[in-house]
Amino acid sequence: MQSNSLAGRAARLLGLGAGIALLASAALAEPLKVGFVYVGPVGDHGWTYQHDQGRLALEAALGDQVETTYVESVPEGADADRVIRQLAASGHELIFTTSFGYMNPTVRVARSFPNVRFEHATGYQRAPNVSTYAARFYEGRYVVGLVAGRMTKSNVIGYIGSHPIPEVIRGINSFTLALRSVNPEAEVRVVWVNSWYDPGREADAAKALIDQGADIILQHTDSPAPVQAAQERGVWAVGQASDMARFGPDAHLTAIVDIWDAYYIDHTKAAIDGSWTSQDTWGGLADDMLRLSDWNAAIPADVVAEAEAAKAAIMSGELHPFRGPVRNQAGEVVVPAGDIVPDGDLLSMDWYVEGVQGSVPK
Image (cartoon, rainbow, N blue to C red; front, side, top):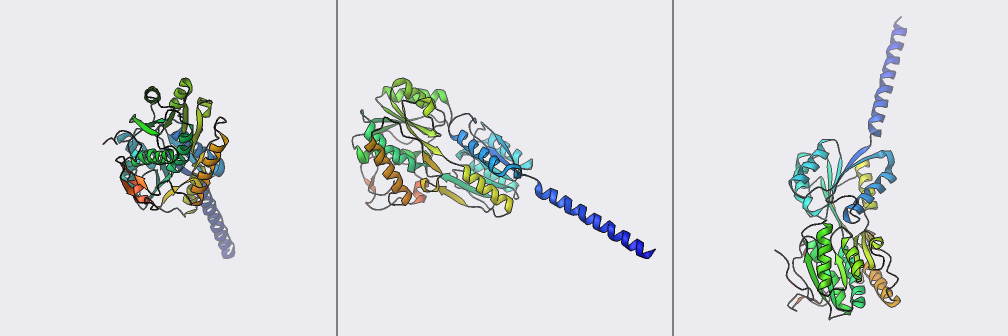
C-alpha cells in the first residue's frame, strides 16, 4: 500500500511538473506587445507612412512573436502623454514614439513604467528604459543640393519647413552648402508652416515660393502636396520621407526615403531576447537608414554621376556635408577649412549658413 501511495504521489508530482512546464511554455510563447505613436495619419505618404511600413516589416519578420498596435494623428503635447501612458498601462512592453515633440511625454511616462522599454525618434533625452534613434537626413539633402544647383535656372530654391528645430535647420543648411558649392549664385527661401502635416498649408507655401521665382521645391513636411503643386506649376520638387514620384512624375527629381524596417526588427528582437539596452542611434546613408529614390530621367547623366559620387563619398566617410569652410549668413567663416562640425553642434543647430534668406524663427 505504501508503495502504491508513493507511486501515486510521484505520478501526481510529475503531472504537476508537466503542467507547470506547459504554463511556463505558454507564458514564454506570449507575443511581445509593441506600440507605435504617430504624429500624422498612416496615409500621409511621408514620415508616418514610412514608420508604419517599418511596423509592417516588423510583423512580417517576427510573425506571432509580436503583436503591434499603432495610434495615428496624435498631437504633440498632452494628448501624446495620454496615449503613451495608455499603451504602457495596457501591457505594451516596447513603445516607439515617432516625433520630436513626443520627447518630454515619453520620458515622463517612462518614469512611471520602469519595466517598459521606450524608443523615441529624433530626440535627445534618454533614461535606463528610454532609447533614442534618428537618421542623418542631412546626408541625403546634401546630395540633393548638388543636383538642385545644376538643375535650377532661376537660382531660387523654395524650402518648406515644418518646425524650426535643429533637425530641420540642419537639413536646410546641408542642402544649401551643397547647392552653393556648385552654384554660388543660388539662394534658398524658406517658408515655415509650423506643422508636420497640413496639405493645404504645404500646398499654399509651395505656390507662394513658386510665385517668388523658385523653380525647385524642397520640403521637410509630410504630405505630397508640395510635389503635386510643383507638378501643376511645371517646376521641380524633391519628395520627403518616402518616394513621392507618383504624385508628380514630371516634377519629382528624387526623394529622401527613410528606412526604419531593420531598426524596428533588430530592437524588437533585442527586447524579446533580453539584450535591449538604452542607447542612441544616429545612422546615415552607410547604415541604410535613408536612401535616395530613383532619379528623374530628365536629369543629365553627368549630374546623376556627380550626385552618386557624392553619395558614395559620404558613405565611405571621405565627404562630410559639414566640413569647413562653412560661412554663416553674414559671410563669416564659423567652421575653418578642414574642420567638421561636431555631432553635438549639429544636434543643436539654430543658425543658417550663407545663402539662406531670412532668419530662423525664435
